[in-house]
Image (cartoon, rainbow, N blue to C red; front, side, top):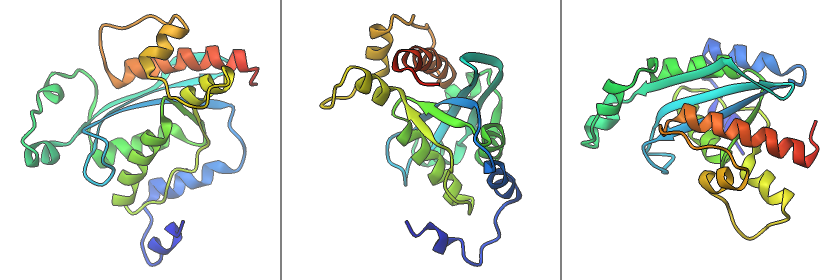
Length: 198
């Protein structure tokens, strides 16, 4: 609530200044986001990978996507964890600051979409705070909330697997942020249509 106090007398990075200028008009672009993290603790855990796809006019644009593995060697070393997945990954590998800069540039003023998107946004905001930036300004839609609204359910949450089964979206052999983002994109389009959203 008092985020603006933290920014007094701090030099804001150029990529953040550029991001803030993009909110003059509403976007017709959705960015479907999924992150893989080292855990659920916002102050101790880190983002390990980001996968995202753009949707414009009810079409998923595969070429308009973002994929990165974040090089978190210090975190992994300090916590005695393996970095095998980083070594084996064929995705672009970027330092945390470079990955977040690139993702913020990719995101622009698009509407974010995700499964339990609040956590993904909170993790990105925690990273942005370490970089002396503000918080994401993008609107966000959650497919779990959309599903519950469609079925008028208020007392429970649904996993991505449960939603995938409910809407007959196939499973992938791989379990990556990018695969999850694509699944979320398919579910979002189905829910958007059923809810009559423009």
